[in-house]
Image 1 (cartoon, one colour):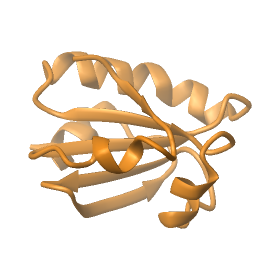
Image 2 (cartoon, rainbow, N blue to C red; image 1 turned 135 degrees about the vertical axis):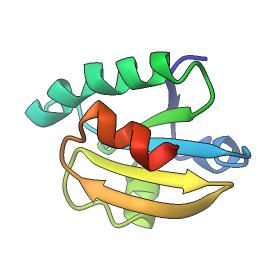
Image 3 (cartoon, one colour; image 1 turned 90 degrees about the vertical axis):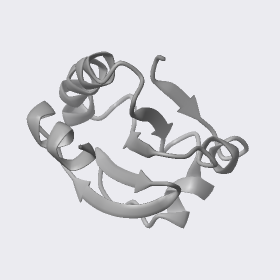
Length: 102
């Protein structure tokens, strides 16, 4: 399974999944987001689809970004069975992502 891109229109349905979902809020102009992107891609590849990974562009999807009060990017949210269990702004090392989603 590859990283999916959610929109304001699709986000809610994409979150209906069971298990662990990592949501990355980002923007194309954001330098730290560009650094975090390959880390997130490696993480997704290494978890072999056991963790659902979604990206949300904050510029294109203001409703979803506002819903979670995203004030800085990149911001990572982790959901377990659709419930928010973790939120942090900044670049997360792959090992921390693995520990948070284990």
